[in-house]
Length: 150
Picture 1: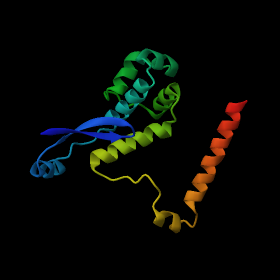
Picture 2: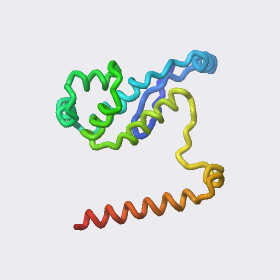
Picture 3: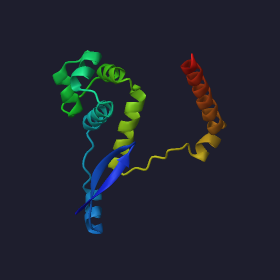
Picture 4: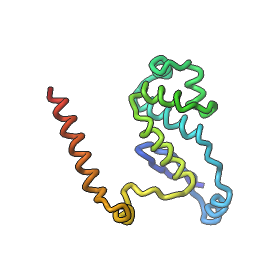
């Protein structure tokens, strides 16, 4: 069995890669994805990327240090209110954290998630989504640049 790096949203994980027969048997015996484990991993990764300690984040989020540690280790199922508080303390939008969790779950399930909006989707809803997204992005960038210049 050989370990191979797999990158998801800038986070590198190691995946076992072996013979084709082993891969087929692994597909049949997929591990169950536990959402609280994935949420905890993402929260820990975000905190560590920021170079912050559990104590700092728990104080900012108004959550006990022990409970935050259990959430990060996937031992406790955090409520939506608690997740929102932790994300605010980390200065990360809850939606971004959940998106990263979603991407990790998709990888674990072997589902391919496109990074772009499919052409059929934009045609079906009768809007030029790429144009709309570019307009929104340009507006946000110009607003951000103007506020940064003040």
